[in-house]
Length: 442
Ligand SMILES: C[S@@+](CC[C@H](N)C(=O)[O-])C[C@H]1O[C@@H](n2cnc3c(N)ncnc32)[C@H](O)[C@@H]1O
Image (spheres, protein in one colour):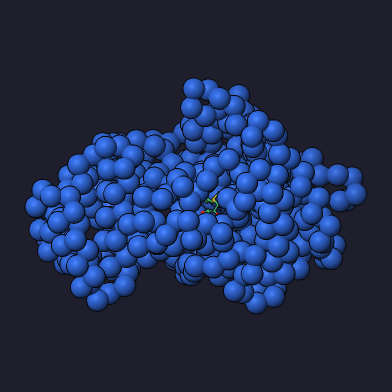
C-alpha cells in the first residue's frame, strides 16, 4: 500500500517543529474533505453540543464565534474543524498519521479491509454530539472493525465493543491494544519474518502459525494473527503472493502502531480504556443502565452477507462459517423468512440497547434501507417505530447521502435517540443550543 508517509506530511505542516506557523486568524475552519450536507449538519451539531455560539460565513466553510469559548477544549475535541483561532486541532494532527491513500484510514484504522466501516470523522463528531466526555463509557454493540472504539479511545472516552464475529473482535482489539505492546511486537518481528521465507504457501503458513502460537503475550500474538489475516485477505481478494503481502502489511502495521504511540505522546492524549468482547447484541453481557452513550451501525443491508464476505478469514481462524452464521443478525434464513428473522433480531437488539443505556442518555444509530430480492425493505422506519415503541425518543434524523463507487448514490440515516423519561433540563440543554433554538427554550 503506497501513500503519504507521516514524516512527509509532518514536514509539510511543520507541526512537530516549535511554532504553529502561518495559519490564517480565521476563527473556525472546516477540513477540506467536509463536502456533504450531512457533514455540515454534524459539524454544526458538534459545535452546539460543545456550547459554541456561531455564525456560518464565507461560502459555508468558515464559522465566526459569537461568544468567547474555551478554544483549548475545542481544539482537543472537534472532528470537522481543521483550525480554531489560528491553531490546528488535535484531529488535524491525528489524521496526518496516515499510511494509506484514503483520508479516513489514519493510525490503525486501515488494518484489515472490512466492508461497511464507519467514517471515523463522523464517529468522533457523534461522540461529541451525544455529550460524551473523558471517563464516560460508550457502547458499540455491533463493533465491526472497531471504528467507535478507536475514536473513543482517542478522546479519552472508555469504550465497550461487542461483536458476534471473532474476526471483528480480533481486528478491533489489534487496532486499539497493539500500542501497549509495541516494543514486544518489535522483538518478535525478525523471528516471525523468517517463517515466511519458504515460498510454498501451505508449508509457509503452517510454520508461521506455529511460531505465532509460541508468543506468550496475547496482544502480541493477536497482532501477528491479524497480520497473517490481512495477507490472507490480500491473497484471496487481490491475488497477491502471500509472503510478499505478509511482509509489506506487517511493516505498515508496525509503523501505524508506532504513529499512534507517537501522536499520543506529542498531543499528550489521555486515552480511554477499551474492552472488546465477543458477544450477541440480542443478549448483551452488560448491566442495566451501565452505559453513557451508544454509537453503532447494525447490519442492515440484508443483501450483504458478512459471513460469506469474510469466509476466507473465518476459515483461516479455524471457524466453520456455516456454523456461526446462525448467530448473525441479517444473514439468517431465506426469502420472506429472512426479513422476519432480521426484524425479530433487531427488536431484541434495540431492547438490549435500551436496557443498558442510562436514562436521559443518547443512542446514535446509523442505518439505511436495504434492497432484498429487488424489493425495498424499510429498515429505517422499522427501527424508528420500534425504538419509539420501547421508550426511546427520536431527537434527530439526518439523511446521510453520499456518492459511492461510479457515483452511485447511497443513502443512510443517522438517528439520534434519547432514552425516555428524559430529564427536562437535559432535553432543554440538547435542544436549546445555538441561534436557531425554538422559542420554548427561552
Ligand atoms: C455494519 S457492521 C458494523 C461496522 C462498524 N460500524 C465499523 O465501523 O466497522 C455490523 C456488524 O454487526 C455484527 N453482528 C451481526 N450479528 C451480530 C450479533 N448478533 N451480535 C453482535 N454483533 C453482530 C457483524 O459481525 C458486523 O460486524
